[in-house]
Length: 274
Image (cartoon, rainbow, N blue to C red; front, top):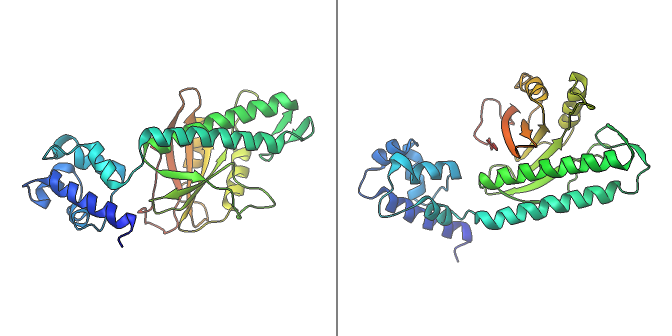
């Protein structure tokens, strides 16, 4: 019996062949600005490309034939319905925040939280949790927009000294199977300093790494983002690690930059939010 992946591959092969129409593989590839092998493998049922490649195949100069649309290709590829995933993202974000609040709710009034930031009283802790909720929502929404499958992870075993990343997701239909995020907050009262980001980077480098695990440090100021981006491929680390800049007020990811990759010089497993 064929499994779901085989069924999706065959459905996608059929629709790519229909979109190509009477044109040659090379002509269609050139119009879509993708490689010849991308279409060749897709039509043989050996490969389902990313949503970005599917957009190239189904819009603009690619001029898909026989009425094939972007939505048709996305469904054939097996990507989730956007509205359903958006609802999942919202639910997961709320769950993560509730769990985070529950974990911290019984702490003393004045605490040093797991990020090493002084929080004077419940108000400070709640403000940070609200920020973390917003950023988590931004990350999940960006993943939805990029058609990245995800689910919440509750069994992370790669923590250091009982610490675990702020957000941990299982990833499907991608070269990586797990993606974790360290979220950092800078404001007028909690200003960016090089030492604060260096400590964050040191913590991130101590988490588990493998060729199927990606980590990201999420910051909300360009200074912090640029500080880490300047160290891209200069750190002694073998793993998929990036820095992400978010605008919490515009509710979007502004930029993402890889700091290192598991295989030196090989970016084939890169998955980006922008």
